Length: 223
Image 1: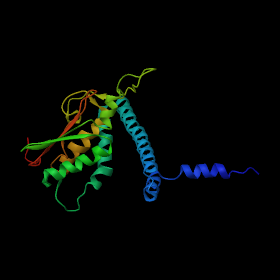
Image 2: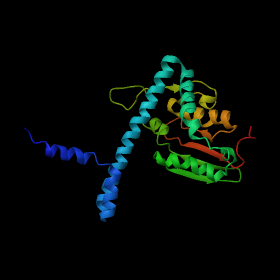
Image 3: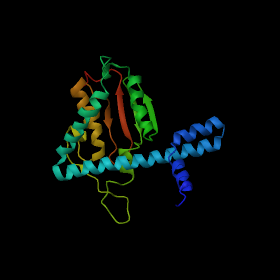
Image 4: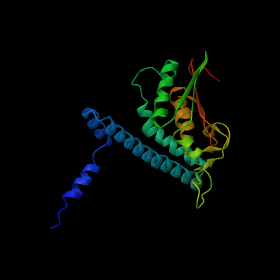
């Protein structure tokens, strides 16, 4: 019988979660090992994020190309009703628009940073402005994933929405992945609670930032 013990040892070592390796190294006082494990954990997260973002963009592109752009909105609305609406239920707590602007801005910054964005923050008496290079939808634009498919380029030929209604923020040319921002962050929250989560100006061309405005007086009475 073949001895598989070394093979099993390697596989079991590969199965140790990166977070456990970081924690073990920190507790042992081994800074170098902790940094190596942290770098590996970050690289693996980035790889998984890239997989998931392209998965979503590919699926939405297929829906839009074969069933029409309205199908993209329908699919995102289904996701909003099934997942986001229950998740955002405050259980009788303050509505989003009634929270202080800083609280709302912090809630927006957290997922941006978690997705790899570096956020620039400015403020005046009317609003807080968050400007960032988006680590998901914006990154797809920067990487040329909406360019036509070629043998030697990064293009995936993902769909660019041509409508000029609310889903595309009033003008054509919205990368399909970014449609979740209009549907799930503006349209549905306004329908549910009378106010969007944020007022957005998304990336449309490589190098452009995504900009969010968080108005201090909420949104209920804004035009």
